[in-house]
Length: 79
Image 1 (cartoon, rainbow, N blue to C red):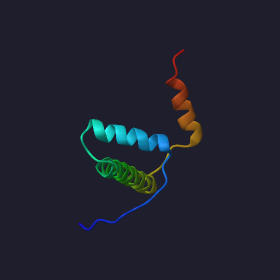
Image 2: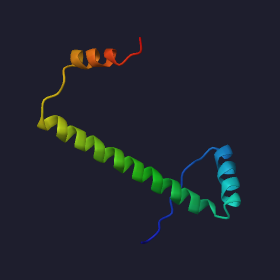
Image 3: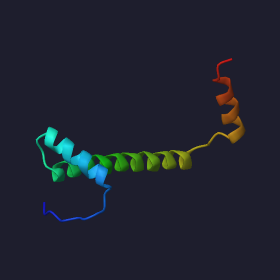
Image 4: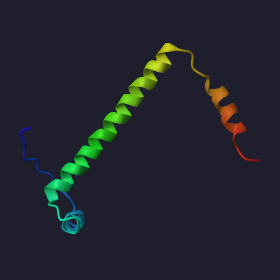
């Protein structure tokens, strides 16, 4: 897969922490940034898929009224 250079600003303390971690792991900064972006993208994709599934589920069937949800939630409280 072709690689592209991406530039963005990062607080200096974050760069230092990133470099310290890269050194401790015997990796370079780019490796860690690629790993972080991979995790971020996977997490966002997972969240979007679940949101879309929930919307489909809501569109397909009846939903509880707000007052009913409040009543149910109040019954879960410790007394």
